[in-house]
Image 1 (cartoon, one colour):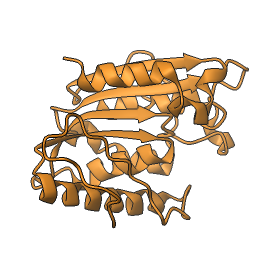
Image 2 (cartoon, one colour):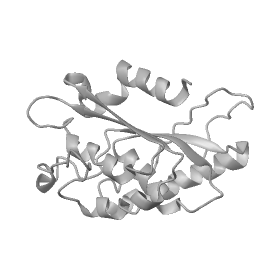
Image 3 (cartoon, one colour):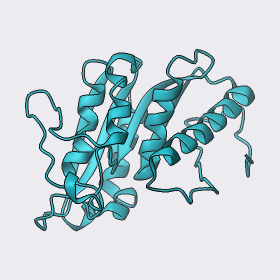
Image 4 (cartoon, one colour):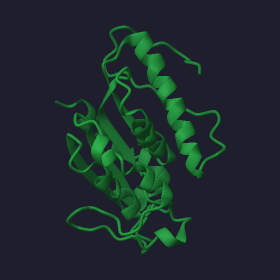
Length: 205
């Protein structure tokens, strides 16, 4: 792991972009745990350098699965900084459009529970009892409104299935749906509305 620059001692709201050089296992269940370990190493290194008591985690696409598995795998590690805010952008928690059997997943309007769960989702159900209660969660997803009920890669209901994993545990939970062309999977992290929502959620008091 390498840092390409240092964070000034009194930086306000520093942002650290994490890129995985070894991301060739994308799409395989175990890769999420490998990515989770890489993320943990980054968090540990930052804590050693700056002694952060709290951090915010923002993920897009597969990054969400690495973040949520990091929280799930390391939830009892008291040496790690607490996750104050978790932002999920286009997270395929319960399958992607490439999994045809998961395209017709329904979400219970009362409980948020999906009627089908893929193997990766089953592994995350432990969060319903272990997610730290001081973590606020913000879920952003897209719907192209072209009849696919997806952002082109992630079904809307797969993204919405995050609610069931954190319900009753998260400090707060909020969803925002980006509709139309700007809700396309890759455009969600180049979107002015998303940027405004992120700034408000993470840093506005």
